[in-house]
Each structure stands twice: as C-alpha cells, then as structure tokens.
Amino acid sequence: MRFALCVLFAGLLFAGAAVAKPSGGLALYGDQKYQPGFTHFDYVNPDAPKGGAVKFNAIGTYDTFNPFTLKGVKAEGLGYLYDTLMVASADEPDSQYGLVAQSVEVAPDRLSVTFELRPEARFHDGSPITPADIVWTFDTLKAKGAPQYHLYYADVLKAEPVGARGVKFTFRNADNRELPLIIGELPVLSKEYWQGRDFEKTSLDRPLGSGPYTIAAFDPGRSITYRRVADYWAKDLPVMKGRFNFGTIRYDYYRDASVALEAFKAGQYDLRQENVAKNWAIGYTSPALAAGLIKKAMIKNEVPQGMQAFAYNTRRPLFKDPRVREALDYLFDFEWANKNLFYGAYERTESYFSNSDLAASGLPSADELKILEPLKSEVPAAVFTNVYHAPKTDGTGNIRDSLKKALTLLHGAGWDVKGGRLLNAQGQQFSFEFLNVESDFERIILPFGDNLRRIGIAMNLRTVDPAQYQNRLNDYDYDMTVTVIPESLSPGNEQRGYWNSAAADEPGGNNVMGVKSKAIDRLVDAIIAAPDRPSLLTRVHALDRVLLESHYVISNWHIAVFRVAYWDKFGRPKTSPPYSLALDSWWVDPALDKALTANKAKLR
Image (cartoon, rainbow, N blue to C red; front, top):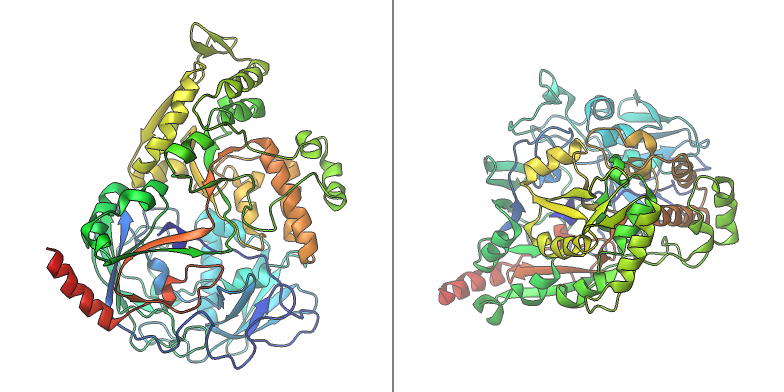
C-alpha cells in the first residue's frame, strides 16, 4: 500500500552527542522514550499469536525483486526481506533503536558515527551479517542505486570496518545533524550473494535478505507471497517483539482500483487502506458489510500530511512563468469537488507540511525574516506580504470570480482569449497533457479540465498503466501529473531530493516539478544544518512560504486519519501509535478467522 511504502525520513540527532559513548539508540532532542532494558514498544501486543494468512492488493504488475535501482517495476512488500541497522519507533517523532546494530556511537565532533553489529545477526541462509556487508551495501547504493540514494548519502564520505564488528561512517561536515539516523535506516544486503550478479539489472531471482519474511512463491506480475521466517534471528529483540505476526502475506495484483475494490467486497483479499472519499462513503455497501463481516475503522493520526497535488513540470516552457501556474490554480474548484465528490471529507491543503507545527502560518516571524531577507531578490515578493491561502469558491460550481482572476494573470503572462481559445502572441493555443495512472482520479481531473476549457485551454487527460506511468515519471515525460510529497516530523536530508537544483535533472528522482532555485537550495541546506528544534521550525516555515508562493503545484486535500477496511479476522493492539498505522503490529485472531470462514460460507 502506498502509505506503507512511503519512507519516514527523519532529521535527527544523537542524544547527548557531545559525549562519545555507545548507546542503544538515537534521538533528535532530549531523551528517548524507551530506555535500556525495555522489552517491547508500547503499541504492540508482545503476546500476539503468530501465524495465519493475509492477502493485500496491488495495482498493475511487477517485473523485478530489486527495489534499490531505477529499472523495472518493483514487487510490493519487498521491504519485508531486509533488516536495517536501526528501527524507528512509531510513537515518537524522532527516535531509533538498534536492530542489526546493537550499539551506536556518534563522535564528539559529529564528523562520524560508528555502529557495532550484533554477533547473532544473520542472513536467511545462516551466514553472519558482517561489517563488510554494511560497507558494500553503502558503497553500492551510493554508486549504483536509484538517484535518491546518491542525494541522500551525499554528505557521507565513506564507510569502513572498525574492529571485528564495527562500521564507521565519516561525514563531510558536522552541520548535517540527521546523518547518524540516515545511516541508521540503511538496509542490509549480502555482499557474497551479489558477487557475480548485476546489481543494476531487473531480476526475478529470489534475493537473500535477513528480515522477518522471505519470498515463498510468486506468479510474475500477478501475485507474490511472503512467508514469515520461523527462526528469524531478531524475533525476540525488543524492537521486534509483537511485530510481523502474520504467517504469510500475499499481494494479488489487479488491473485498476475499481476492480480491486470489488474484489475486496467479494472476499478475495483481507484489508485495504482507503484513499477515495466516495469509496469510503458508499463503496463498501455489501451483504458482508451489513452482516458485520467487513469492518471500517477511522484511526486518528498525527502524521504530517505533506502535499498531494497536481504538479506542474516546470521543465516545460509552458509552465515556466509562475503567473501561469497561479492562474490555473484558480480553475481547480476544491469546494465543489469536496461537496459533490468527496462527501465533505477533506480539508484543502495549504502547506507542504500540513497537520503539523512545521506548517507556516501568518506572516513571517522575525526569525524567519532573518533567513528570508538575504534571499529577497530571489523569492516571490508575496512571501513577505501575503498569508498564503489557496483560491476558494462557494462550492456551487459558479467560478466567475476565479475565471476573471485567472484571465488577468494569464494576460500578464502574454495569453489572451481569441475566438474561444487561449492564445499567445504567436497564435499558439494553450494546451497540455495531464498524465494520470489511477482511473478513480479521472472524476476529479475532468471537472478541472472543463473549467480550463471555459477560458480556451485544451487539456488532454491521458491515463496509462502503472509501468508506463513510472517510466514516463522517470524520464520527466509529462506536462502535469498527480504527485504526493510525504513529510516527516523532522524534515532534513530528503528535502534535497524534492527541491534541489541538482536533483531536477536526475532521471527517476523526486524533484517532480523540476524546481531549480538557488534560494530554495540555500533554504534546504539551512534546514539540514538546523542545530535545534526551534531553528528547524523557523527554517521549514521559511521554505514552506517560498514553495507555496512559487506555485509549483495545485494543492489537493488531506485528512488526518487512516481509513482502513478489513474482514473481521484481525486482532489489534489496544494502543495505536500516532505516527504510523503499524499494520505490522496486527495479527490474525484464530477464533475470528474460523468464525469468518463459516460466516462467509453462509453468505454464498
């Protein structure tokens, strides 16, 4: 599922880094919640039963089991195969605890971090995880992995073995305070397994991992099944106790989201996280729901919602002018869509860091102005004078005022309506393609296209299959598309991938809009170097303002709950963590599973 694939990048700092001594964990500011000797995370059931079979859904197809390179369409769930050096807790915004690493030590000058590996850490074939594996993994991901690895590890100069079980990572400078945690997220690959194999090729060879699951079976492009490792080396560690309880996990692939929903209601798979308001409101109506066999839960969270949006590709000359980009924002009628399509479920997104204290509000503070004033000639003037709000309508569908504002902006950018078409000075019509991958989104994009046509803009909606969509994204071959930019509670190094000029031309990167701005580059560097939480907030607020007033996207909407529908076979911990759905803490309840099987038979 999309949310589950999203990586929780955190800008973090070793607690007490001024004194170099080994520790079992890392934290940003202050103490960690879980102290030495803890037995399990508070949001798990340490006695959860193991076993049972669960099925999830995936859309499209896949052709590779290598999730670390740009090539190919990755199978769902590959993260189950790999352990990392550290594990983030889901009820703290900024802490990690040892998994493959039993201890970590940040140098007093913050120019390096050293991890001591657990002697019992093993790959699935029984071979030990060694410092050589860690060094090889880091070097290979940085040199041959997908572009985001090169950017993410840009400030890490080298990795080298230290002693029998230690690995030392040396940093470019001491300013990037999240680097110890960035390295803590490093997946562990087997150097020996990859010898003689081409790391950059797609492959359906079952890879060697060390995580809680292995690939049990697969039907290429149609399904993949993971089996829990019964003798998993880390199963009794505090960070793993009560987690990864399902005996087998299977992903079945469906042509599109509509087919997948019908398959769920027919009992073909067990659980889905819903991101379509219409589906949540009326899409689950069925005999199984009426009989109580399907449960619907809205689980509140405190996860920063980031930005879902219609993204402009500013590499295209058509969208270079920010006045053009701002104009088209007036033609997306969110209030009408929320009323008529979303059952009033959503809130319009007005920050890249919504649902958190990272979102800018009001006019810039004095501390923000200290950061923004030196960039005044390079950022939009509105950053200093305006409180950003997305265009708003009355929800009736009458957008007369919005049309006028859009036309005024377009006129200033050299576009005028003639004979029912919006033309530039050369007589060329304003036209573009909207690249889409989810059929459910067509009902949202098409009304936007109708509003564009009212002022003579021709928008062609093109919905393609996931493989073609990913290839076109990798090549930046689109005019406009839907994007999701996830954010954590502690933004940091990952912001380079989203916004830095150097990332704009990296194939397959995360700078979807093609942002190239020296001012934004400097703001990102300032965020990475933030010495404390107040400084981080100030710098993120400044970046948020500049991004919003630059109009790189037409913001969509958000909701601060997880909407989950599931067949009534699961047990759940009493406590839900604020920063994750934590499906890995759920389990199959044998009694519920048995009753469900009997009750399903009665429905037929």
